[in-house]
Image: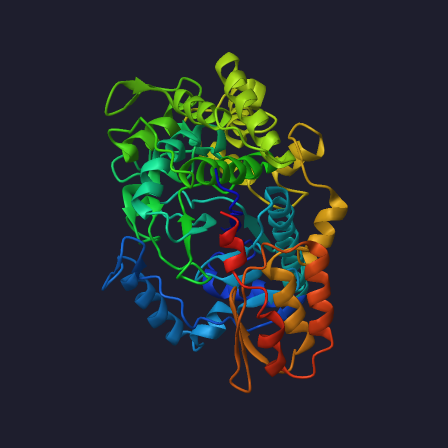
Length: 514
């Protein structure tokens, strides 16, 4: 049994469309949108020490499949007459998150947290932040409705952008064990977590219009890889912990959909966190293995309500059978679970039972089921053919984050989709960091020395004097202890005093709980 507290985060890229122009540059539109948002602690991101070529399997790749695309972007950016940093337009936000342009998409990253409900608040706050930036950008353009922002994963023409999950784990857990323990679960969870998509986009099926459960499944091509833009893996092996790499590794998952449903986002984090912490970190190994995990996730996505049997190395199971196997393994472990864990387990079991009885019972929580029912009703009412482009347009509008235009937002407003966050807590999360962990300390330091800070990242802050402050995770400390630390930071007279103040808050404390 482990008491290790898994720090998590979500990064979401958004689709952006300029409605008043026949053609527009998505790089520039994303840059201008990010720059329009005013509530930022800092506008410089610390890239020092980041290396996406480091592989968790113990080596560094010489060349990523995505590198040529990166170089092509860089060449085109030079032609636009702006630098790498101008293109990124990084904003380190007062709420502890990050808002920037990831080449052709505005991206919001939540602050780090060990609480799924905290992360859900900040993920929802990210939507409000994009809407505020959209409003400012449209005002500068002299109109309204000039931009559309979509929380989805595809342009329906073979390109995908991601919603990435991050889980900070102990370094001493072998990466191979994580992969072995996670893969059947990650494939199977798609049936409950898909956002739904009208169309196929894998190379052999592109142009087909049949509906499927997941937007990302077509783009998953291999089991494990360090790449994120090409040959996308079920388990990404990028080795950037954004913490002390002697003690931590970060599991960076890119296979999941960007959900509109808050229930799905909470379950995505909660289910995965429990599998990692309560099973894999505790030495448990599954007695099942998928024969072809990549093919299996596509079968789950295309199976919809009639889930197919997936080939195991021994036997055949459905995705629901696999999810049931994992939840039963969790229930067999005698643990003192908190209210979040108990909620996840209860919802997990209920969702399986309801899906087996009638998948429509989940239409108020699961995007792909809700969207499928909307599209089916509309197609029947309008007597549309299966390949009518209107249906794909409606699919896209489900993901429009504008409250006055998005189909999901209308369902949520009417009570037909479950909402878990409260307006007041989300409003607070737009500008204020969480009370626990690294984000409030990082925010306090930047706020105390705004003229001295040059750049900052998740783990490090660099000052004009040359000082580089490395932040521990602060995960073992209560909110009142963090508050006292923040008060001390507020009384400091020089950045040179920071290292001594935070020295007692070592990351070892978090590890010693194990």
